[in-house]
Image (tube, helix red, strand yellow):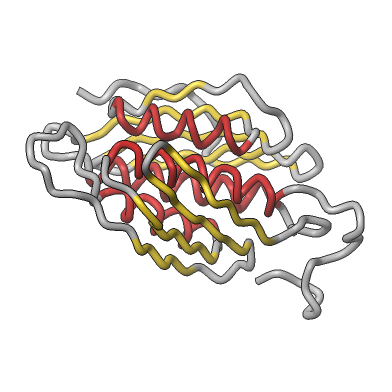
Length: 211
């Protein structure tokens, strides 16, 4: 049974503080996400999917964000709807917290090793969504989490966050290690891209806007 989520506004953003709150409620899922881009720590993750809790904790820690993500849904069927809707809501939250993106670095990339796994993540907060996902997980069978859903998650983040996102697995054998490398690398790359650039007084684009 999907529990009642905390009563928060469906949308709120404070561009000066770069914070945002988003909520998504469907007949299949209930998701609430709040983030603070410039305040690390104070992260609470409870999605009812232990593996996603772990990955999102890693993401928030390496991004240097505060995040409060609470979600539940029809996981009695499978995890697809809930994982996808968490990605949608997180993407919207990132987009709103960035505001007009004036003064940000815009680009970020990170090559992250996790034991035998090596993942490269590069992104552009361009406003033009795209996901290029070159990752292969082993089909071992009997695993608690469906690793194919990681692509669905990042597609939802990219599309709803307006992010051009490239994720490439360079090496890896253990599915958990590969996933960790991806989520940590995404956090590090997003931290670099969303950081305020003291040399950048306006938009990091010759067009005079990011869209």
